[in-house]
Image (cartoon, rainbow, N blue to C red; front, side, top):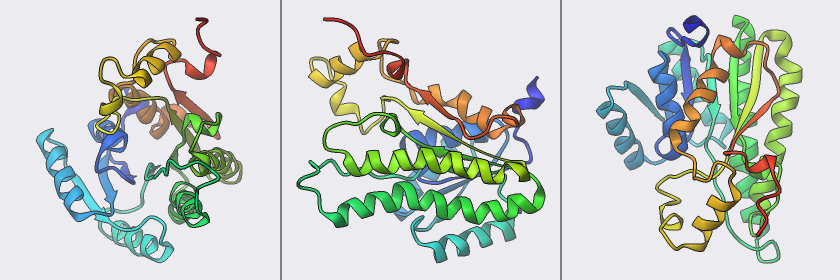
Length: 259
């Protein structure tokens, strides 16, 4: 059974992995044996991230490039392939959100969110799939969201992009399954990260809302993503394709608790 989840000899690229859930998933892949390649677009954050990986005895190789720039993506992937060989595992994690009421959101901001959250996964997936096709195998994991299924105030662009990413995942899986490429998605719920720390203090109404709304009765721990990430990156998921696995403590399974 251990061989099913063994990633030794595999090359994994995780975008937006200088912090947060991207870093957590990247660590899981590395600890399962994969050679880890980390993408970001801010030099200072990359430096801090590589230091954080090293503190856990994880060798991570950093690559700075804009995931929305097709030419830069192609150039960077080519450099990676020259040094490490073909990418076996791609995690499209890089993303952004703009919290603005739809009536007040500029078209420029809307397009920017869609470009990062939806167009960049297409750019990267298309680029790595060419080599995956040649070698006859590959794993692509798109980081979706509960907003791939649900609406919420002030995140119209993000929800539209993540809903699109869900369908992109299914369509790429449909087209590329013949090449033994599996394209799946992970939809995280509400997780305890540095970004959500201000919302998780005792007495904050949103903290209580999430705890009450989640059947598990807690925020997710980034380690809760370890298993599903390794599963979708490994042989264990070779016949799993076009699926979105929601890691949300049960939120999407219920309409909530009665008052």
